[in-house]
Image (cartoon, rainbow, N blue to C red; front, side, top):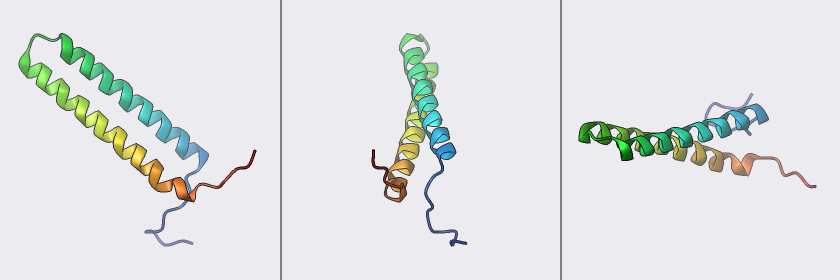
Length: 78
């Protein structure tokens, strides 16, 4: 059994989950941005922009995780 600090290749189920999460975070960031652009309240707008940045950070973290695992993915010849 590999040590806990050694990265293992992601399973297809894990990849699907990460892709879904990236899509969800992107959608949520867009909703926050769109709502912030239409609100009249500066405090609500500021909160929504903060939420948007948080979702973008989550998306970046997920993408970085995929990039970190990229070299572990098996090569498939077509």
